[in-house]
Length: 193
Image (cartoon, rainbow, N blue to C red; front, side, top):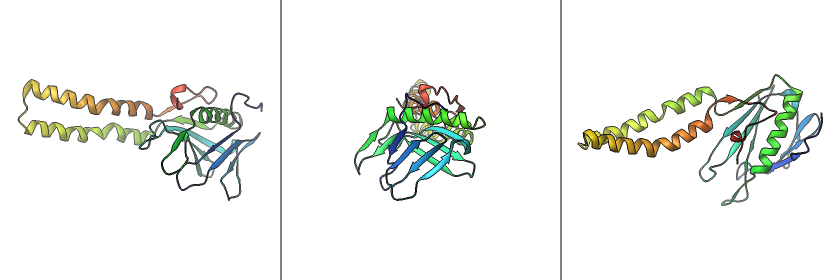
């Protein structure tokens, strides 16, 4: 396998405040995970059966993404695109994360052509995300109708409510849509910008 000269061969991240930093290293035939005081974990690329890219915003981390790899045993490992510096500060690592994930996907694909490469939430969870706003929007609309708002005024207020609540929801739906991807050419919208 030829080395990926356009991508870093290592990526370090602290996924959560109370976790030690983890360094992921691309080696010729396997991925090495160094997690502080623990012994390094070695995962053969051929043993990785799934790779999922997910838009995963948390409170102040609106552009957070996560790459989860699953090995034959069912064990999962996650790499975040942001790192915790301390209690208050979180740093995005957009370019390093995107380059590392692209190189990792190419190596996995070369070693295991049967690996599933997917982006977005699982289909069952995406279905719940589609249905969730129905009762959430229904309650304010019912409340508007109890205020005696009728006719055109009701349609106006309902439209404003749907636009205010609907735009962020639509953006989130777009980012979470389940789809497969080509590991040799990951689309830019699947990685942080």
